[in-house]
Length: 370
Image (cartoon, rainbow, N blue to C red; front, side, top):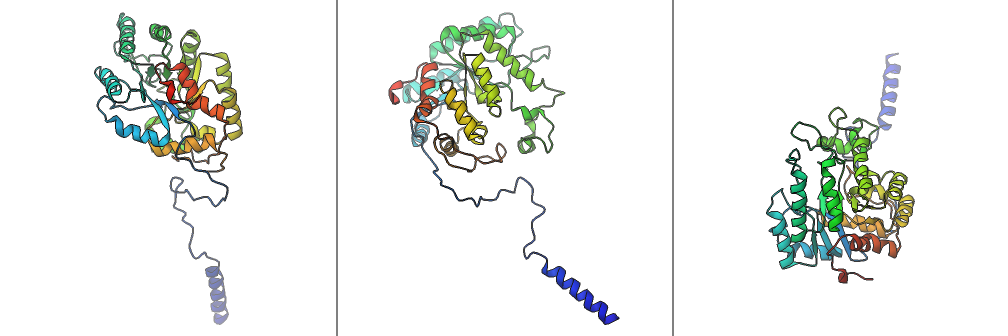
């Protein structure tokens, strides 16, 4: 009996051993680490240069007041970027940065850069704040500023002396928006954040990885107004000032709902938009995105937001090719794959430069094909 039991034990042990993989699966690996190269074999057309010279309407060069523009334009040339719009003309909120930045451009690369100005909401409780800020805006345009950039602090974190949130449609701001229309300069405005930043940080949140890696981006509904409220305030401003051109940054955070964005475009003809930092939304819905960009080809512009030349390659590939299933450049923004839209040359030209030439003053049009 003892022999039989030992024999059975040996057989069971042997069968168990041969059933085990030689290299056990790593069950401790998390979602952040799991990123296998695709085994899919399809035609690939990676691009490092845009088909047409383009204007980046959404860029930030905080140190333009004293930076060497030669090095920067060399990198732009490699991408076929003809003009960069620096939205951060005042740099780190210094009054001296704007004239210095504009002078640096005029003296060294007058045809390659456009500078936007910025305003501060400090002192908005002062009855003369609107008057003072309008005057500052007029002076900035005389210096050479070609537009106004509004950062996401307005409507989200900016508060008055009483601790009340300053809404984007605060009446004290109406003279600012109206003056931009009078001066013929556009307002590129970033309002709010992606809607999932307000949602529970759980398995159902599509931006869970980003909120894990950047927890300060979470918008606790107990501390912040709702996403719907913040965005509605922005849209109210657009409607109230039809003579002012607004560039709604980041596809207005509606890149994941292009039908809704289209309805907004139809309703508000003075609202334009750009694709900075939201390319991943377009790249995962190639048929819908191509249809949208074709329909609204006169209202969408090229933007990138952060300056990293190699990241532009994915933009070119999504817009210009019909490639399938390729990587985005930042997993926390898109754990999914990209697909090319294969836009027509005419649509590409409008997104790359024609629309910006039409609404942003001061750009040298001779750098672009007809």
